[in-house]
Image 1 (cartoon, rainbow, N blue to C red):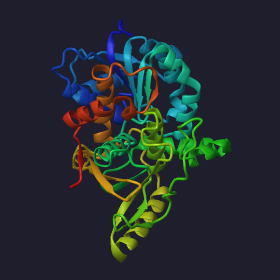
Image 2 (image 1 turned 120 degrees about the horizontal axis):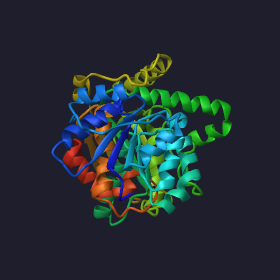
Image 3 (image 1 turned 180 degrees about the vertical axis):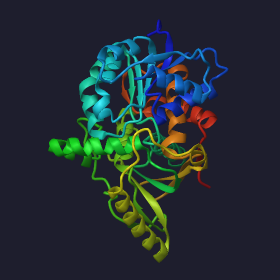
Image 4 (image 1 turned 120 degrees about the vertical axis):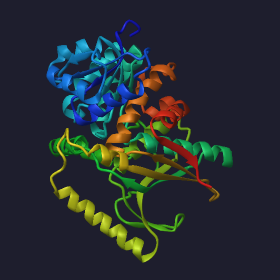
Length: 392
């Protein structure tokens, strides 16, 4: 794609999250004359409105493209080296775009957490992407970059301290302020509707190794009810994104040549607190999540205010445990709400990192962390408000 007019096209720029991605690129790279990017969406009028709203240069290129119009997607892809797509549910709106990118060698980034669809895309398009040189990357936002790279940095510290990676890593959410997106809610609804029609999808949803074709690792902790963690001396409660993130972490391990081992065990849960108060809090969090599941979710395109996004944050702990019981602990922190403010920065930096820092990544269907590793960590720390560190 060396003859492409653009380095990056933000497809879905008229949606809530897509607009945030475009706004980030416009602000953060406004003096970078080498980065050529464009915005794409279904309506030219709406694209022009977004252009004004985000304060982007008036000459920012705009492309009309629609998931229901294969010719428009083909024309969009032909103009760019990479596409960032925020147009979901991907199960409904992502098939033609990813097929076109895989066939033409165009890099692809999304925010997908739809595990059965991701597996179907791996099975369908991996060979084409490897042949064309396209680097396809799912889950380039809060699901699952901080967790994928959190596990990676814990293993890097384990190698430094233990001399080897650890067969067991625990991912723990210590604090999180922010809301999940309307797109996430719509994706969940679409996946469960599809699973109701195709029972084989239910098996994929339950399988910790759904994204590691031809590999089945050891039994994993279910993480589906409150438990007491002896290592951390605290109560834990289920984390609603664990069923996405854990699958991506296991795929990363596979893509890294099973650097964490074929017997690797990984889970994610949310910290509720110690003692009886922590036990009660864990149960209340479960009850609150159940109540939320019965409420009307935010609609795609809706999201929190700028103030709410800027007041959001997250703090994640990763504990790597050696066979002899020794531990190392690392953390990942983000400076914005996870579902929007931080996510929009992460996916943008993924695209720039692959374009500029990790050009030698071969074609295939990757996790961002496995593909870009320390290069992505460096860029996220320098530009996207993430902090990676070792617990003292």
